[in-house]
Image (cartoon, rainbow, N blue to C red):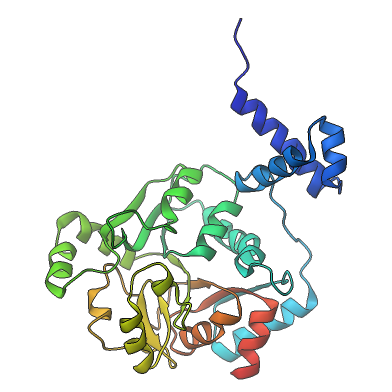
Length: 318
């Protein structure tokens, strides 16, 4: 007799728990009683339903305040695309708040029948977006990375997203097989002239749409937290006027890339300002307001997915 696949049974159980929680409105105690499991197991099943994409919760009603913010951001910064998601309140993870809206924006392009080259940066917000959209057969598209995928210790970068996205789409994907930050200009020159790297680089440069994360350059800068710059280099960049970074390329308050030895070591494609194709920033949170605003001022990005609080902060200081 064939035994049932335990993983399939667990997924069924997780999906049912997620449905009861998000659609049925049951508490975890009620779910535990309904499924005949402990409260702790019910909690784990609900978490698994979301993390594995078994349940997707989307807000279909467009809140008037969010629409007004979208309109004003578009007008003031000349954006081609703008989506503002309702916030989750003080202390909540902003990436979680905007992930469903960002996934909806990505799905607009995935539904297009003609082949698209879709480029991605990296970061926590893009990773959250990648977890939110439903698996679909979109193998007509090509998924490409903007930047290197090798961390300083030789490991794969923690928040690389293209493999996860491509897996969900059954689409071909093209990682950038170089260090995020090279040790010397000569090392970068060597890597960037390798034939496979050149192929990925050229593909990324002609992307039909690009999704990027935005990093702040304050003390909690992702580049510093993730070990890509030392405290000394971070201080030098701050002294040079660093306001934010996209794809590890650092720019100032006006969205101009800083002319520094550190920028010259980045492996990958720099997103050039003033592009006609969509370049959509996926970013939210108080620490990112300055960086997002600078990227829009400098036209490094021409699209934005963010949350209410971030949108209001950007407009209040613009």
